Length: 341
Image 1 (cartoon, rainbow, N blue to C red):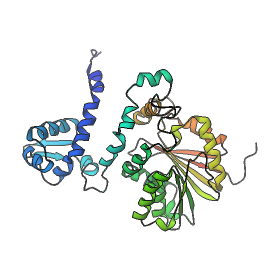
Image 2: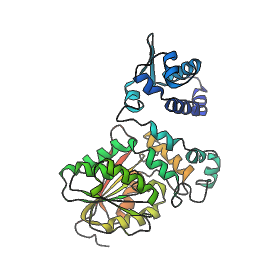
Image 3: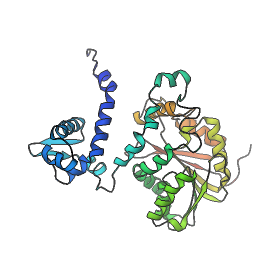
Image 4: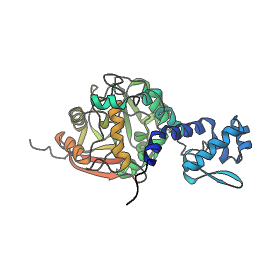
């Protein structure tokens, strides 16, 4: 039997040092500089506009953390770091720091004990789901690249490349990447993006960049309040339901159900923990984010989601975990024949 160790306590209580070191490296563009061939502290200091001592200490820490390699020739990028933190990479994710380390988001964790006592965010009455909260503009600007792979996975899962004249509703579209992935896979698909007006400006810019602006319409407002229209083949509900309680989710899902054609599908992307609520780790831990930032949100299990969808009229709910991601896709069918009450 192993002896008790304080290692986990020290690693966790000081974890902010690791995340801020990573942010510092991204701010200084250290990973791009190494990718360009600046491998020594002196070369990196000149390229990044920093002190040699500072760069050495930072890069040594990044090597300990697993973001860099180090040998006699200097520092190097790991395959993951080269793919996601070298600014020249098409998969660059460093911009996500703008949202993940925003003062509005980090501030929600200043008093976790208070949130636990209350059972929800103590930042404000509604937290990050307050109407037109400015954090979602930063989210749309910063988090789009991180959602590229899940968006492509969804397009593949629903067979977008084999689809016909699809009409797709993208609820709380944000950056718009999910609808645009379908538009790229299916040149006959038309996307309707719904979100607050300032956020839609980001989505529309991305639609222009993707060459899909002529098939991209918008509806401004709250998904709980505005009219969706009808006749949709697909309704995308990505990273949204976790912000609300079950009753609110069922109200939204009934609207989505009514907007779909018979045989249409709701496609949901979420953090879905197992029934034990402690695995897999990333999905399970996401519930803490909801506790700190929302009044009633949660990381719901599949059985909870399935109950919500069935209560809203959907059938044949199926879940698929996305490889290499903490998230899962739930595909829910609107029956061809209405269910009898």
